[in-house]
Amino acid sequence: MQIALLGGTGDIGEGLALRFAYDTDHDVLIGSREASRAETKAREYETELDSRGRTVDVAGHDNAAAAAAADVVVLAVPAYHLSDTVEAIEDAIDEDTVLVTPAVGMKRDEDGFHYNRPGAGSVTALAAEAAPEDVPVVGAYHNLPAARLANLDADLGIDTAIVGDDADAVDTVTRLTEAIEGLRPVDAGPLANAAEIEAITPLLINVAKNNDGMHDLGVRFE
Amino acid sequence: MQIALLGGTGDIGEGLALRFAYDTDHDVLIGSREASRAETKAREYETELDSRGRTVDVAGHDNAAAAAAADVVVLAVPAYHLSDTVEAIEDAIDEDTVLVTPAVGMKRDEDGFHYNRPGAGSVTALAAEAAPEDVPVVGAYHNLPAARLANLDADLGIDTAIVGDDADAVDTVTRLTEAIEGLRPVDAGPLANAAEIEAITPLLINVAKNNDGMHDLGVRFE
Image 1 (cartoon, each protein chain N blue to C red):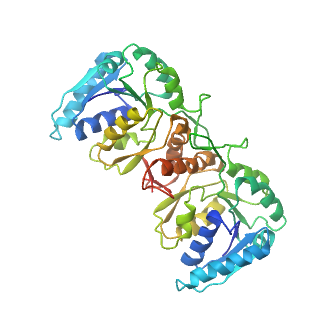
Image 2 (cartoon, one colour):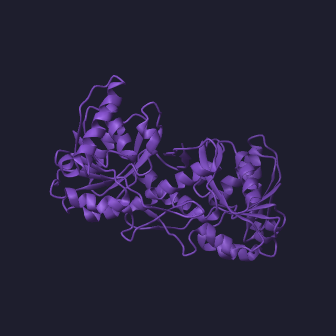
Image 3 (spheres, rainbow over the protein chains, first blue to last red):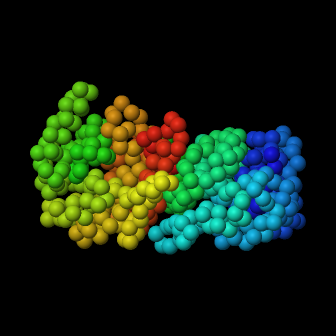
C-alpha cells in the first residue's frame, strides 16, 4: 500500500512517516507544498531508517503528486492549512483514496490550552466537508505525542481513537495503525464523534505542563 | 478526615465511598436527599466492607447534614442536580470545606454520546458558580468507570485529572486520591481547563460501545 504523509516534514507527519516505514512494508511518500522540501526530508528519513538497519526508499513530492500516488493520504497539517491542502489535492484523489485527518484546533490562554471547536463540530468534520464528496474521510492520530512518535527508540504503548462513516476506510486505517508497534487503534464510531477525541490534545498539553516527569503524553483507554 | 459523598447511593458515589472506606483511614459519610436512603446504603457498604475484613462505620445522612460534618464534600450527583444539591448544602459548608465536582454533561444521539458543554464553560465551572464564594471548588473524578470503581475486586490502573484554582484544596484532593489504590491523580491546572476533561466521558462510552472486549473504561495519560 502507498501511504502519503502530507505535511510529512514536521510534527506528527515525521513520526508517522518513520513509524510506517520502520514497522510496515508499505511504501511511504512525503508530501509538502514544495517538492524540494519533501525530497530533502525523505532523504533524512531514509538515512535515519538506514542507521537502524532498515533500508527503504522514501519518496518526496509536492502534496498533489504524493496524494495522486497514494492509497491512503494523511493530512498531517495544522488545522488552519487543512482546507487549502485538501483543495491542492482534490483532483489527485478519488473514491479509492482514503483521506485521514489528525488535525486538532487549539487556543491558548493564561490557564492553559483549550479545544477550539469549529462550527462544523470538529476539525475532522471540517476535513470531511472540504473533501470531494466521494472520497472517504477517517479521523485518526489526533492525540499522538509528536516527538515520541518520531523517536524510534521510544516505546509508544498508547491508543488512537478512530472515527469514520465508511466502514471499509475505517478498516483500512485500523489495519495500518495496528502495524505500528505500541499503537492500538480503537473504534470511536462515526465522524460525528470526533470532537471529544480532538479535545484530548489540549488536555494532554495541560497535564504535561502541570506534572513533573510527565511530558510528550499520549492516552490509553483502560 | 471526613469525606462526604453526596449522591453516594449511586453511580460513582458508591464506588468512591467503598474505595475511600477500604483504602484509607478517613471517615466516609453518605449523603442523599433522603436520610433514610443514605442510611440504608451506608449499612450495605458496611456489610460489603466487613465481608472483605474491613470493619468500619459508614454514616448516612441527608445531604446538608453529611456536608456539615465533612472536610471534603464530593458532589456525586448528575449534572442536572448539581445546582439544587449545592443550594441544599450552602449553609452547611464554609471556607474550610473542599467541594469536589465530578459531574459531566452528556447528550446522546444516533451516533453516540457527546459532551454537552454548558454556557459556563464546563459543568465543573457551573458547580463553582453555584458554590458560596468562599468555598474552594475542585474538579476531579470526571472519567471514572462507575461499576469497576464499585467492585473492590477490580483493579483500576487509571488516572483522574484534577483542576482547581485553590492550591491547598487541590492538594487535599490530590492526596486523598493518591490513597485509592490504582487511581493516579494528575494536575490539569485551573478550573478553566475542566471542559476537556469532562469531554472524555462520552468518548469512553463511545469506545466501549464500538470495541469488543472494552467496557467500563477509564483513561491513562502515558
